[in-house]
Image 1 (tube, one colour):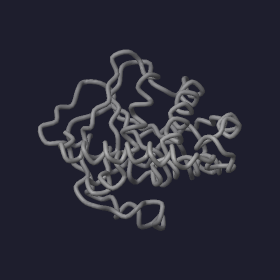
Image 2 (image 1 turned 45 degrees about the vertical axis):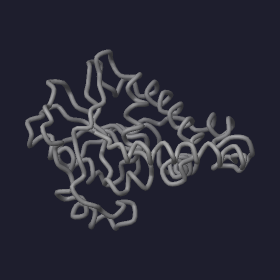
Image 3 (image 1 turned 90 degrees about the vertical axis):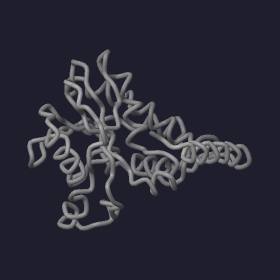
Image 4 (image 1 turned 180 degrees about the vertical axis):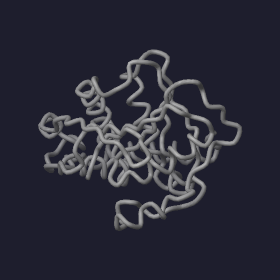
Length: 227
């Protein structure tokens, strides 16, 4: 569970963000238009293109938007690294549109959404875990009875996967996850949630932990897909 210190730090960052937003009007991260972190025109122009693939370990992954779309990359970057609240609002709206477009690829029974965890230090620096927020945004599109459960923890800091050559990514996340102490796996299909899938090594590492704990029905869902 989040510590009192962590809650206070997140509250301070949120209030600071509100003050900055009030003092310095936002501009669209994609086109620069003033008024919003992601303007209506740019948001409307981002079209869902759901795609599915199967990783080498047999895990099916569904991604909602192509990461190659410049506006998608800019929106994710603004949300993750600049704490742009308006960017998060737009991302969550796009998540709903993406899920509607991917309805035939998504489960039709209750599921457990399992966000990829951040290292504690990185989450404190950022103020949130984007995978956890994304999972919460996905929940309304899931069948009734679905839940978000943070079943995994990050056991060590890792380099950002996107900054590494493909051949180094598996080693970077090897043994980087573990099951939450005392966690009990519900008897429901599990969907691991992350913001972007590229090589798929992060999802494979997380899946391996859940399988070792006894889970058998595991897939993954990401906001964006690359590769």
